[in-house]
Length: 492
Image (cartoon, rainbow, N blue to C red):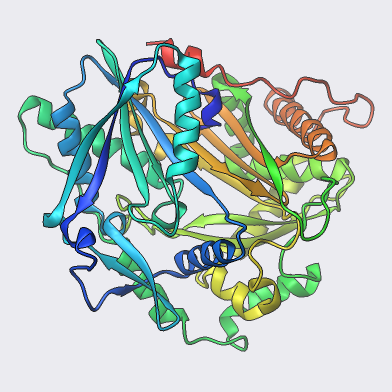
């Protein structure tokens, strides 16, 4: 399972059907829970930005989606039943969000009052037309301020089907996507066999949000739990760590984005890369982060790496099978200065990560609000921010069936003012997906950076260290190797 632009996905043509979520309470203009629940800090900030953008006639838009395959003729009734069961099981998916007395309330609808309304969308004769439809469908259908906050559909063919679900970020995160795939297909296959649906416990994200708010809503800027953030800000000089390379952006301006993905290491190279990282007493994600830091430094960045890193808040098993936005974002810094070899930089990464994890309890949005209130009032991060994310998809729920289900994750945002990169490892290797501003400078900068990074991780796998003549050999074009998604979809 990997993440790449939906535009790169080869979905074979066919008949498209969608299922619209209906609620008797929603259609009556009310909810089934007059007391409601409080949104998480992530959700509240996300919803506030959507409200303010709408009021300024400058709407923001983004979505996270998942696609996966069903072999054989699709049983539409069984899939619809599986999808409805999935929505009923996860409370956050059946919530409406409303601003009440200044706070954002989550108002869950009674699962018994939910139903799915099937709708035949049309038949597409080419993959190009189908892909164009899906891209526009996701863009136009996901709205933070409108319920429901996701769409569900499938492309049906005689001997197979491609199922798709697209969500607003307010109800899920990237780690929720493997859960969607595993749960929907496990239920579907059970229903097709005539068996009962059996799934592991999945506590409600609303309970997580409630616990989080009870712990951190009352803290102020003097709270000692913010000392790690304050120390980071003191050394960096500002709350957000800047992306250190030129992207050609102007202050207070948002830009259309480039969304691209590439293969950094194939399966065999990734195995060797992991062994090299373990030999250096580190983990593969540490090796990738060390490589990123060295490439940024060699391209003109500082010797000390400073960036933001998303960290899962699912805990050790508590929320493993729950859908929601279980992500905290933390600052990390470490020494990647010239002259340090791979083992030394890895030691710095390990020390920096250990220090970061020791202070991961305070929610990012709460720290942002308390320590950078002027920037918190804005609708976006103030400038290009250094951001790194890594997920080993082989460890996600249902990973043992990924070769059969062929799932993929897709993210999209209408505009940005910087760059974000996500790294995923699966059975095929190490992959990179980047979203960045569409400017000539950013295209040059990100192209050079991605190629340098590919050569660096390949060098680590082949030589055991940073043995790449970056200063002598200019990065080659084209950037990396685009994912052959069509071949991935056809290989079975």
